Image 1 (cartoon, helix red, strand yellow):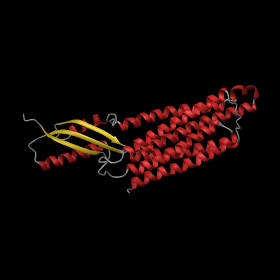
Image 2 (spheres, helix red, strand yellow; image 1 turned 120 degrees about the vertical axis):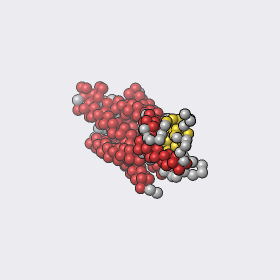
Image 3 (cartoon, one colour; image 1 turned 60 degrees about the horizontal axis):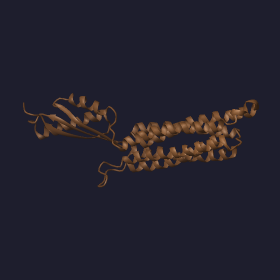
Image 4 (cartoon, helix red, strand yellow; image 1 turned 45 degrees about the horizontal axis):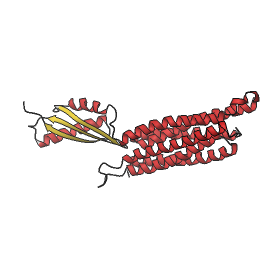
Amino acid sequence: MNGASEHKQWVALTSVAAAVLLTATKIAVGLWTNSLGILSEAAHSALDLGAALVTFLAVRYSDKPPDKEHLYGHGKMENLSALFETVLLLVTCGWIIAESVRRLTVREVHVEPTFWAFGVMGLSIAVDVGRSRALQQAAEQHNSQALEADALHFRTDIWSSIVVIVGLLGVWLGNRFPAQAGWLVNADTVAALGVAGLVIVVSLQLGRRTVQGLLDVAPAGLSDKIKPAVEAMDEVIDCHHIRVRAAGPHLFVDVHVLVDGSKSLNEIHALTDRIEERIQEIAANADVTVHPEPAPAT
């Protein structure tokens, strides 16, 4: 296992530990205070725990080298991991919305906005800020979509935790000022709906990018950068039929180039090596295949 793989797996594993801590704490405080906002956050964190576990396994599997059955490696496992996370988040949102509607219409629940309720949400924000930064840095460093998806989840938790705190504050103000309690008493439930709305938006964005990865949608603008860079090289007459596909953290680039057909095989081979290096300056660590073609005689 190389250093990059170890770093990715370590960051993913620390996210699992953080999710365990937050889930257990939120469930305990949510049940104690009867806060739907906190319970919705606990459900969100529980699914984040499942997603973090899947991310950890996906990162381990995606870094396996190519074999006889997976000639392009195992990078697509990261895309599948992100899709799994998207589905989990949307299922959670469905439960939160249904429970919120019941509490607003037919089910009256008394919420206790205690010190511990505010404290657990403050702890959640602190942990999520640290985890999201570490995950995002690792995702950018290793071009890992799975870690990027995990970082996005923790950032989503920060936003939703702030919404829940606002909801709890509304309930507390309603208890302090009964004359305005008519609408403030439902602030926690409304906050839960806000959590669901935020998560749905982010989940759909993540799902779109995941599907694009599974369908081999080329990274936007990369082909337009490769063509002029290669054609600017000496001895390259034309660069065409550029194909780019991503598989998790791995990028594959195929290009065809027109060259002087009178060159020797050794000269053409040396040229293709230089072309690969030029493309890797644009797309770091890409697996590049160059197909040289003889230019038509003039």
